[in-house]
Length: 115
Image (cartoon, rainbow, N blue to C red; front, side):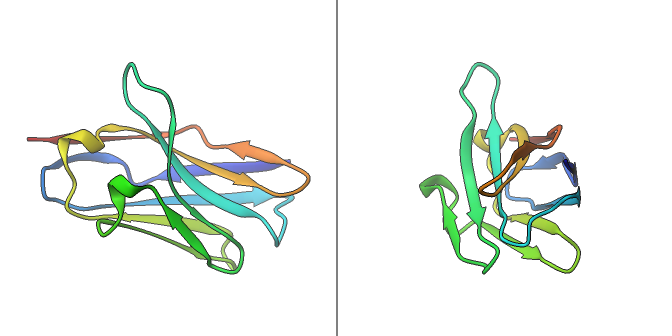
């Protein structure tokens, strides 16, 4: 089993920055993929950014140039650096980790951007 714990959410003004962390523990595969998703009230959960074990990344169009996903394999931790935040980025941000044998979600962390 894999446990994911997110941290770093909070309240920030538009234009500000936050850095989210997702620490994985348990039976973590070295070949796992980690990703950040978000869900705003009344909306479906959507992918924000994904990073493979070899640090190949993919971003949703709406965050390109503003957000950066990274990971530290030695710490089994993924990060999401969020810059130039906009009120539309307000959502619960979830970390997901998956491999050929599992898929796990974190509990989510709230990000609120005030205008």
